[in-house]
Image 1 (tube, rainbow, N blue to C red):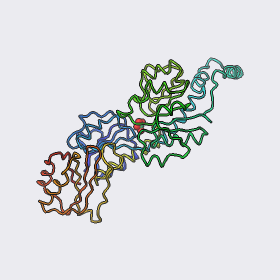
Image 2: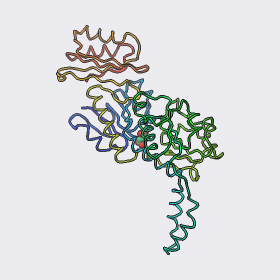
Image 3: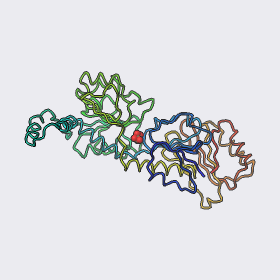
Image 4: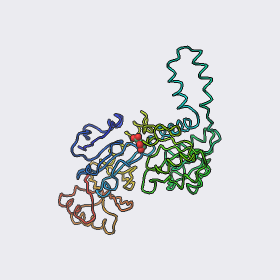
Length: 393
Ligand code: MLT
């Protein structure tokens, strides 16, 4: 029985993927094989000996202590793309809210509760509407920073709306490059992208390399009155530089899913309570994807969409029932495989199939064996220097 501890309200469409005969899913478990969460900030103390995986039902993993997980051999999963459409639709909303007097206009109209006469109300609306005039997004230039699952959907949507779209991604994958509409002009650096954009939309994870990426220098390269949309993460925009850019008029509007106390109440800032992925569909998609990834990992050791482990897939042989699989995580140093295999050879255990992958400082092995190794053999493998975790599947 695999134990899954949950935090946050995870969609039941995802939770029901865990077969009750094989998985115990419970928010109150003291120890677990895996953790499934959404926005709960996970403390490193949650990484107990039994823990093998953490799955985030969402794209960002900045609420998970990823480095500590990696050191403990715990695989961290996310669900790239599962909520991309929800975020894309809110970016569209942000573009429109920033361009037209919608927020102030609604506020104005809905607060005229003293006026009971229809004609009087209508006259007031017609008189005041000039205060809420805006401009159209058609023909304007959108710069998209980060061209992954969400950024590429945003780019495609903006093209469909008649915008000119340019993109920059410091770490564009081959897969993402293929997905990108051909009409997106690729920029070589942020400075050239922001210098020629009317709107800029951020779609990057928070990493050491992206923290405060939008800083005073980047703001200085922008055109006056630029609109910046941040549906990625608060930490990507330098807070001091942001305030200065708004004060100087360099930035005309800041639309953000991450409210900041010093920006609340400003007419040039539109804040939302981190609702980019808050749709029924996105919550279901994320929960299903996270659950399926956890199930395949806990049952077969396969890894898909991890932020700290290599993608790994080894088909189980036809007679899977009689075949035992070992999943071994070790530091990515020479001679590990030889040592592991020699323990198995000493036990006269035949290897039927195997996979060895690495990512940065971590290596991951799936080894299918003809017979189940003894407890002594498992202990001997665990004791090899630089072996981090050994799991029998
Ligand atoms: C994400 O990282 O995809 C979002 O933050 C998901 C969420 O709102 O939970």
